[in-house]
Length: 156
Image (cartoon, rainbow, N blue to C red):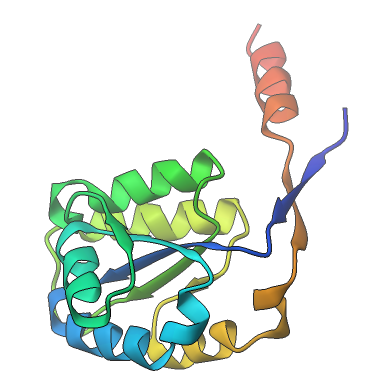
């Protein structure tokens, strides 16, 4: 077994759209400005954000629970399942969020699975305008099956 496996992000990206309350309108405006690009992709998001984006832009956004009610964790689980491969998360660095551990866990799992993660408008602008938005993208991640087998063997 090899140490890594290659995953492919398809031409049509599965993009999660998330925003803290103080950044929801900024994300909605960003989605409106980038609607022509976003409509080519599958969109999902946490509860209130998904609903607000759909209402304001007519982009279809599948909603999960709101962040404080487990939505960030649902998105993280979908990353693990390979069903989300791109995250736009407009976080508010100036306001404390009671579900901050969930946000950190989401950021960590995005790093583990080596997927694009924008946490502000500038990064989202750079990512959405990348030539890779219209291409497949291969990336390598840790071979988790091998890693688990090796750990189990070492614990015997």
